[in-house]
Length: 369
Image 1: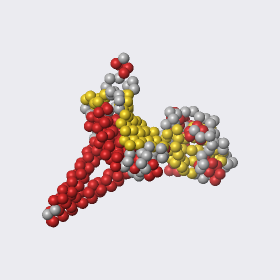
Image 2 (image 1 turned 180 degrees about the vertical axis):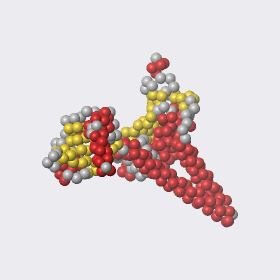
Image 3 (image 1 turned 90 degrees about the vertical axis):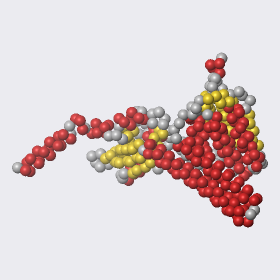
Image 4 (image 1 turned 90 degrees about the horizontal axis):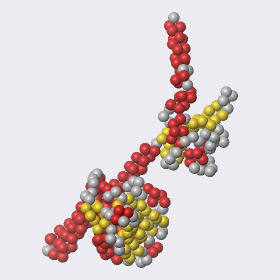
């Protein structure tokens, strides 16, 4: 009797599984993953509903054309590997969805066999890890930033220790000149440490800047004058072009800090370029168009490659030794965004960079006219 009950129960479960609500087609479309089934020509013969919704209907197309905008198959194609050896294969890939946005995925292939046991097609399952990859990049950038800050703090502390040593030596020997020199070292490094901590706090907190009229050419001129002695020290021609009468609404101290960081980075980019010693130039310009005030900081320093440029404002990337970015650019980007503006960059290795800041002007020309 027990065996009979178990048999009936097993038959009932089998009927339930084969019911219309759990048919293979519905299972295929109900899983929360992107799935394709492809033939030996890499053509998509079937796709899950979620994949079609997010990437569009590409049935009959080759996968590398439909999802990667490639004319040729990938160099290490897991689909081809599964057709050849009948084994499962995994990979990390980047696809482009229906809006053209990149989606990072973990992919796994598995053979689909016919009744004769031959591989008739390959099923490929994609798991979206775009947010995980973004978090990884953010954490990596944060680690780089912390390393840069720690290195800078170490240098400041060494300067403080050196100043304390010279002051103590001066007191011990009754030498006023040693005391004066050592105390000057202490003051400079305390100022550096205070400025670095304030920058870190500014980047960490959420805030809305005050809205007060700021005459942009005057603020930019102050920043240029501040860096002129340093530029001369490295034989860099630092120029200012600010003939326009441009006003924005915001905090002059923060806009000054934004421009100062861009000029400082431009000087770093020039000093890192040994091939053009004595021929470096930095041009800081202020202008406007119909709606925006425009600040441009152009240098002919070492420049950046495409990889560095593309991630420059996406994480806390630091390229010390290339162009001296890191906390300074992070702060500059934050100032611009809080003033409802943006920073963009154009750069080529060996040819220099142009950083462009756009901020809403106080009186748009379209309103005045």
